[in-house]
Length: 208
Image (cartoon, rainbow, N blue to C red):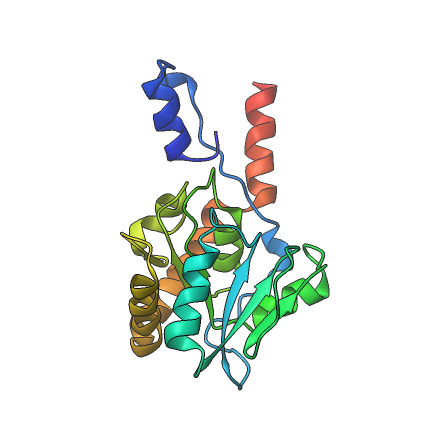
């Protein structure tokens, strides 16, 4: 199974814990080169990657940005979903996962905000860690495990425009604390979420 969250669910349904092995979904870390603290100069960029649905928490993110953050920050959305453009809101549609343009969006991001309300895992959080981008996330899916109980990113106890803004301020105003989380997240991604290493683990289990 991909996470402790799934394991606990299966155990609650009567599956023996001894029969369960956790092998997280991973990402190909060999093509990533984290740029911790080396973002390009310019407006502070918030990044969101995914569908622009209520389930992903996008209405909350948009409200937080429009009401409190628009004057100082640009919001970049990497999505296939249609949305009306407006000043400060930058849309990136049709990007292929793993492409040069996709990589560029991560490298130019100052902050990744993911206020999702329902997830099965949250692979995009692993990608954020891999690129060394500070993360703010809900606790949906495996987020609490991926972000190591808040040591690799800020976890929101409640998702609202106000809690998002409070977390944003915490990230931007506490540089040493943020960089500690980012560095821990990069190390965690290399240790636990390598697609190549986890694929080898799965192959060994199948062989056994």
